[in-house]
Each structure stands twice: as C-alpha cells, then as structure tokens.
Image (tube, rainbow, N blue to C red; front, side, top):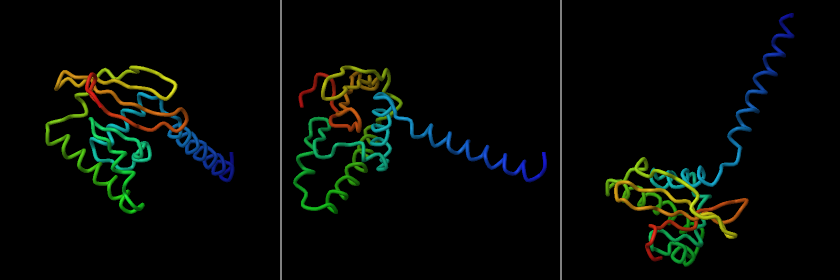
Length: 151
C-alpha cells in the first residue's frame, strides 16, 4: 500500500470508530437505566438531566413540585426554580447522610398504560423508593415516593 492509500484507510477507520461511538451513546436506555441516571442526577445536582423531568407534574416525596412550578410566571423563574430544586435536593440528600449506592435491587415494579414504576430498596432506612416514569417515547420522571407512603 502506498502512503496515500494508508492515509485514506486511516481516515475511514477513524470515521467509522467515531460513528460507532456516537451510535452507542445514542442508544435508548431501558427504564431501569434511565431512572437510575435521572435519580443519580438529582443526588449529584446534575442539571444536565433536567429534560427527563416532567416539571409540570412532578411529585417528590409528598410535595407537589409541579403545582409550584406551574404557578411561576415566566421561563426565567422556572429555570431558576429547576436549578435551585436540583441544588437543594442534592444538598439535603447528602446532609442527611444519603448515598446513591445505598439504593439497591433496582427493578420494574409495575408497567401500566401510562408509564412504568421502578422500585429500588434503600438499605439505610429499610424502605423502598418508587419512581414513576411517564410516557413511552420521551419518558420523564413524574413521581418519587416511598412505598406505602401517601402522596
């Protein structure tokens, strides 16, 4: 092979590798992976995952976050609210000695027409957390609660 052919082949191989990596990253996640990623985002304050939250309808540990969010008068205040919610959730979770790693046995709890409920056991409190993902194509988190806890 001459030098020019080797360079062309090298460019093609690099291009294929980049396309393969992009394809792998774009692969849709299953409900368990998506739910874990969203919750990990809350725990770590990772606002990059906020598009996976149904802010208009979110309920978190008995609080109707969505009702408060819907009352905000403009996009700037909604953006600020989302940012503060992430920050406060993360700080509060860690201040109370919470650890993401303490959530184990992630599983599908229930599949229904309106979405999926994911369960994870929280060994630090001997409780089970339930996370509701709504929709089919563009799934979003709509609820976080403890099993048996009223909304």
